[in-house]
Length: 417
Image (cartoon, rainbow, N blue to C red; front, side):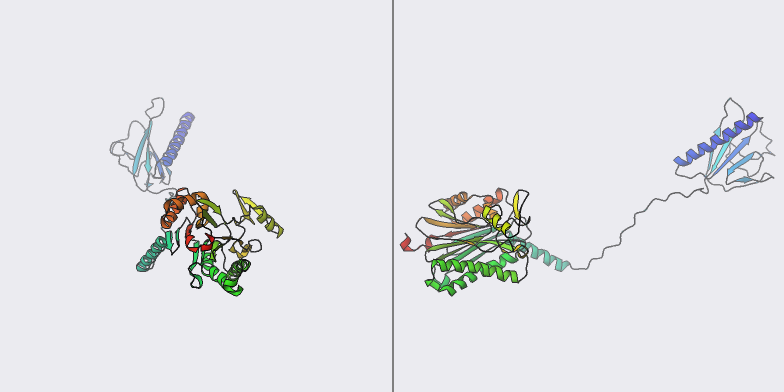
């Protein structure tokens, strides 16, 4: 008898273990388990009660029914259940005994709350104002501006200029031209400007540098001024332009190289890394020297004034920031970035063919002699400028490029031939 009770307990435990595993696998949650014991031989049909294996019907009366879980049996044999989806499992005992068990699973009420899937909250709708027409106009304006600044050309009586925007959002190069000074066709002023930190400084230099120099020349005595007076006037024009721009309190700066053609002479000045190259019978002659922190004299000047020069990514920089040591503007570095130009004066002789003024967008990829060769071979100022711009771009330049070529034959004095 004890053996049978132990065997019965083991079977019940095995049933509960199986149903637990079944509940872990099945998406439906097991709630009620009933064990129906049936002894051979079966009771007579008139007095039988319980589960009929053939028909699958369940009668809520009979002493042969035991319920585990939410169902329960009364002393009179009546049972209270909630019928749901009915499942059956017949377990045959070991040893071939005729005693068997039928298990009913009632899935009407879950014993634990099913984990509901986490739903992603839909974001609130974005309501945009209806500005289709204004946005279209803005896009058209941007396209026109981009096409206008992508490539630019300018020409005059004795010069041609070609310019191309680099990877920056806006074009930061500029230029300045004043021809027929005081009504004299042999007097002119030309400048190429390379801005940084925006266009503000480049635009200001283009509009004011030439006029400031001419104003200083007038103060020196017009045509009666000596070469020294002209040199001082040019220096004063650079310093005045820088001082005026600094008073505006605008950030940014500009490098520039300029040429004043007057009295059969070249007055070349520069701050920064824009260059002027002269062609003498097809041979390149660099008339300017770049102002960079890598120059010994520039580094010594900066360090003597309390600054420092730092090498970063292979480039020497003032205070670890700017890669040039002279410029107009740059208010935050003005203690070390000076605007005093280096000036060179030389006569225009018969071997002086043309000048090439350009920003570093050209000179970083094209040598002075290569540029002179291109202009000499083309014989057309327009085509030569365009070819130089394309040459620098094809060699991988990503900076803004501005190239100006000036024919010097129109400015030479007859006595210099």
